[in-house]
Image (cartoon, rainbow, N blue to C red; front, side):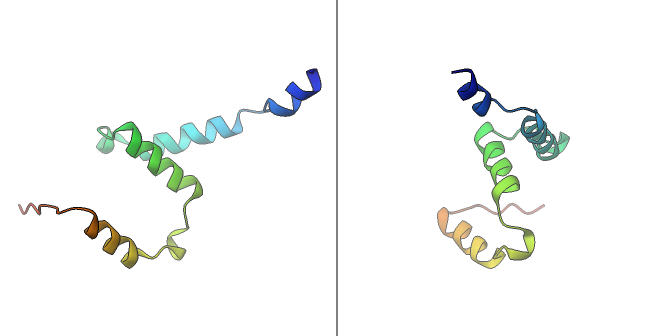
Amino acid sequence: MLLKCCVVIPMTSVQCERGFSTQNRINSKSRTLLKSKALDDLMRISKDGPTPGNFDFGCALQKWKSLKVRKLYYK
């Protein structure tokens, strides 16, 4: 039973520290109003998402545009 626990329990807190670092990098002073779902999604993209060189921005823009009607505000 003790060996089973040792296999499951992480030996370091590296993953936890990386998570906090990612959260602090994303949730800056200018983005303090992010909802927890949006923050979670951005953290997952940061950790597991494609690199900027491999990401198809045109396809993502088309998908985003098709989701709902958006109002444009001009200053």
